[in-house]
Figure 1 (cartoon, helix red, strand yellow):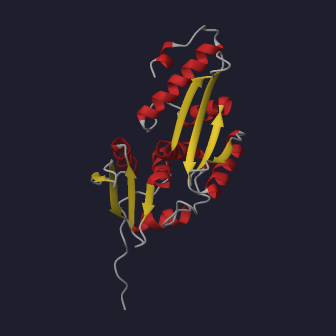
Figure 2 (tube, helix red, strand yellow):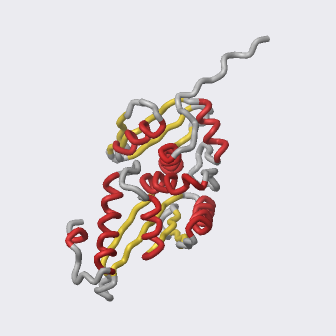
Figure 3 (cartoon, helix red, strand yellow):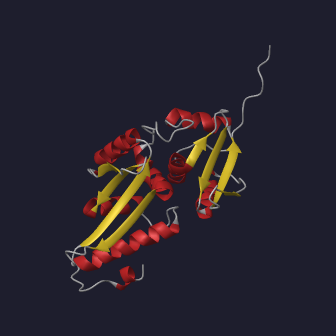
Length: 232
């Protein structure tokens, strides 16, 4: 009895900086359907879905949907058995949010992967301390429903860049946060945006660049709050 035709994939499976970024997006905002073939990526930022298409070399339609509260978001859904199996092999699974742990990402592309995860489920913030007015605070934070995943992520960051950070959980939230402050946040930012042309969510990159500019001017002895920071 002859076997059926082998499944064909629309995604070219080969690690690169763009491919790793797309994997980071799937880990943050993606979903594997239980049918063993469909991948869905949802985001409030249409720009992210366009970047996802470009990074994977696909041209999937970006669709709109409204939440129960009437909030607009966008999504891509496509079928690719080979890519789906690859995602399972590197550590993803259906209904991953609370059970995700390690993701098999090559060291060479780890910070591209992290940048994708940051664009999906990360944020940065900075401010002058209200008590110590000359003290400028800068933080980078990631969110997840799985503490096991953050234990792995924190371990990779410690191994690759000697960073520690800290894991916290808010009382009124099911999400866990992995936070980095001051010098560690600065190191992560520079490693994620190691060149200007990397694929990313531009508004998040610009926000971080303004914070880094403020840090740079303060170290050079500039007095007062730098104009780039005031413009935020």
